[in-house]
Image (cartoon, rainbow, N blue to C red; front, side, top):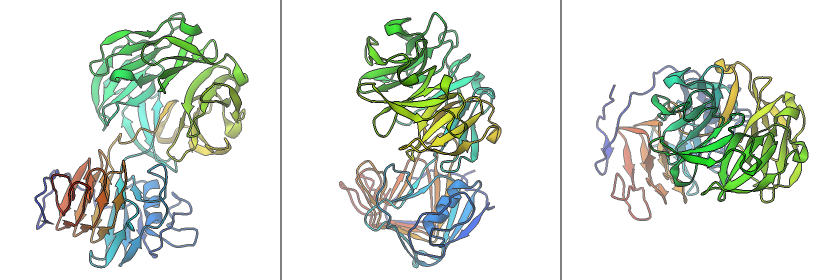
Length: 490
């Protein structure tokens, strides 16, 4: 159902798309009682409290992100200045206000309630983030909330499009469709929202899929985990047509290829039997070297692999319940990063570093996703428990953003001002990522600046503007409020 603009005030005509707003029923209501900028002490406990015992705007948003439902924040009159330092990654709890779940913010009036970027950071970023988990026994993909691991939604329903035994997920670069590899269903394609777009590569063309990755030329590379036929296949990334066997049977000692990734002109492959990491030329598929020798550091049944924020290579050693760390340049063994059985780890398979810098690991035999400190390897917690959200058998992990439905955000009676979007940061005031929705009512967006798109608002999703003003926002190549040829306002 379409919403309508009534008595909107925008200094230059703006073309907008519309979407229905969220129902007016709120799961939790938080009332901000401090203009201080501070993080929540324990996101997800339903208590908006900083370490100083105050309910700040940032803390309220963090609680809303962590909890289910369309939460609401009451924002009294005041000047809420963002003062925490810039942080990496962009969805870290510092700098701008990251909204990842449906939310309503009600101010006391645009003339008295200000959310201020302090001329240092973007004010708000609305995006859909979370941990995606392939459920190979339920033939579906589930999303869990960042921070808490609470169930968020089933992104791809059971058996959708013929999906069977899913074990790998990747999104086509630059916001493309979602591709899921199934051990017995080939590769299926889905829209960002999770709707089936059909079978992309048949199981006859790609039997025994355990991992997939987009690589050079935009092509899709697929493992063939079949005894006596283990190889890496290459398919056209647009049509799904078979191109060639990129890494042939036995190349460099390849046995059963489990996981693959591209980095720095090379393709890295974990090979079960022998238990090693093999390296190939990313353009030709020619064998380069055995990057991690068989059984190095005790490697036994090599499964998932990932390069960490420190540039080192991490590999899951399933048979002895460890995560091993290697030099990212030479492949030399460094240490056992996660010790045997730490946190109940039993049969580690896929691994992934999250946006918080921590390491997430599937514990195959306990049915859990465990979280470890990304710097020390110390156990933090059980991030996803066996059965949460209907999880049957976890088989893959992905932190791809923008997949699923939402968030739907409503902001009324506030002024969003003095935001500054630096290089590669879209939107000075607000950024709306693909799939996100924002409705502004009786709100002012002013004096924001961006070096990318949208001085005031960068809209990659759906934007509704009602009785609101967008003015005085700038881009390096354009200025003034409303929409300009350079997108100064929107």
